[in-house]
Length: 172
Length: 268
Image 1 (cartoon, each protein chain N blue to C red):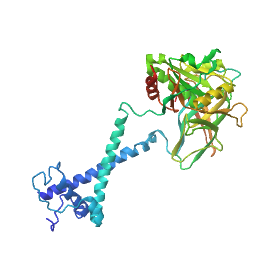
Image 2: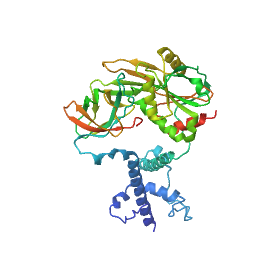
Image 3: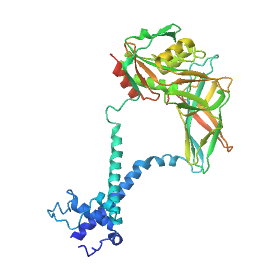
Image 4: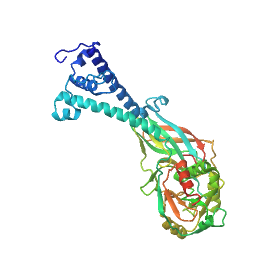
């Protein structure tokens, strides 16, 4: 009888460890698999592309807005986003900018020199408060629901044309 | 029992059976656990059949086997602890009052009154809003990024406040008067919410206000003929109904947290 109960305990301890390890893996590793299903392996893809709507377009004021997206790199080498373009009838100048906030909550926005790296098997998120594609001298009012084609050029020569939806002015 | 190895009911465990670490641990569990239905103590058998060494002493005494069992016990405790923490953080979002980001000024800071030009072209004076909680934001409309994001948050905050939004005014102060005419400001802020206000003025007036509130702004020209940038503080400044600066809230504070701040100051 004693031998049997020993084994019950040994087995339950082993089960406990296994369950604990699986649990820890679920808690800490849960985010790693996100997006795996939605991407072709070995490709550079863009998702969640959007452009902020504009208001108050007038001839004397230089209207600007931002384009935001997630660029995923499932290839085995780093890619560098060097430029972006839109139809000149939408905006005459397009730049890639980075926004930073310092410890005093002071916002600085600067054009990127030499491009932004999209790491191999990683992604680059363009979002408010980080990187964005800056559309300058916007030629017409962009209203929610419009679709705008943004062409991204990478250092390797790869070009991707992205359909970005215009979203409400206050989108995050 | 000590001299004789019990045989395993599962062939694989025959190897494990000789694994003294597990055996030590298992003896320890068997003997100590009051909840274990197989526990000797539970069964009223209080005579330990094996000598139990507490994990810490086992570690100090440094026999490899004891060290291993101590490590194993530690591993299990850690895993359970981490699992418990993981569960806790899930329930955190449901707890009613998480800490608010930002700074409440106690005592409130006295700030000077000021007059700018409002979005209708008429003078805009801060003291005209006495009795209302005023949220001031210093930015510029040619900002694609943090300014519209913040005003999107303000619009959602106003919706959360419901009727109490009547006691609050959201004001966009442009630090880029060269481009932000009153007409442009009017179109800009009312696109977020019909009741939002905007104002701007000459550089000297804006500098005085900025010094008072602790706001930084600076025009930045760069290699571009059609555009320039403006660095600026991205925080929200909350002025109480009595006209003093009550709180400074950082960029990105979500609508629910901002609404809690504003409710705190409405009515005093």
